[in-house]
Length: 198
Length: 164
Image 1: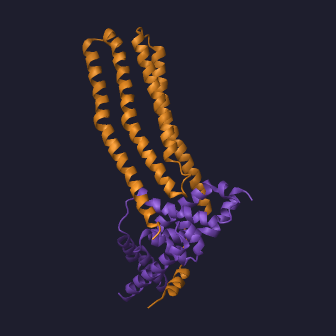
Image 2: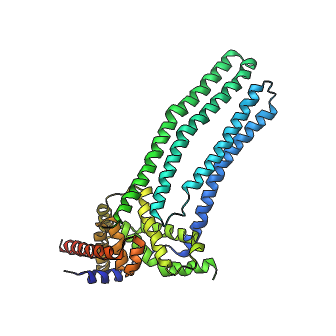
Image 3: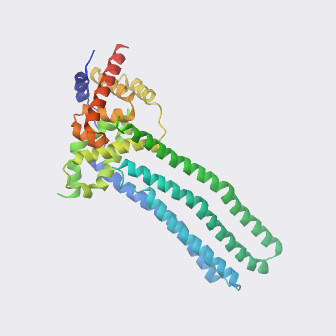
């Protein structure tokens, strides 16, 4: 039979030592910071390229109708909006200044979840509507320039893709993200409760 | 003192205790190292804000506790005792008698609730009660009652475990 003091002595006899040195930590700090920056840079780069291509198409192509110019303007506005949204959401999820305040962090996550839901539903609906409107305007000029079957095929595939994103892919995405965030909040709340007064 | 030198000093003073806390919480050496590394990364990132704090160890413990608790966010974990039992079985031949006792103690800690694991690890590391109260957010009076219960629970678990 051992008492708690004996257990304490076993604890102090342990030779288990961390395998991480302060240099490892500093190296990783650099790596993670670099990693985050790289990921952000890649996403930004992708959208910037898309925006640049769009801009180039707009300038280089001899569009004659005002509807096409309006479509291009809508597409560009959507791209810029998307870039800003990526930056904002990324900045929020990587925010760790509330790390030593679990309750505030849980509230922060709840607010983030709510905002993400609005972003993925209401804002995405508006985004899709603008994109659809852009394509409708764009296809007006295409209808005059290209043959009927090219126009019809283009319209079918474009709207099928928008529909697939909106009705299928986005719903799966929302469900997964919601459950992940819900899981995070539930676990943090459960653990937080264990620290509450007896 | 520059930031790197200060960090080195803080790391050397606190890393062992933080490692014990993470090890006690996870029961797994590799995960404990990862969590400790994550904790100190956060310490490094926020060091400027805490340069003049008297109780920097409290702050580090607080970060470590939250890092351990948040660990559940990224990983669906196996039931604790299964995990630790496997770990102990695999390494059974490698460990000496003394280490066997330590392993058995970790196995018993793993059977406690998450918050109990964290509190008892700090008690074993002789962190003052005032500091534990600040870290866990429990009033000192309640903490004493809680610690008393956890001590009893752990001792019973250890002695039961030793009999088999």
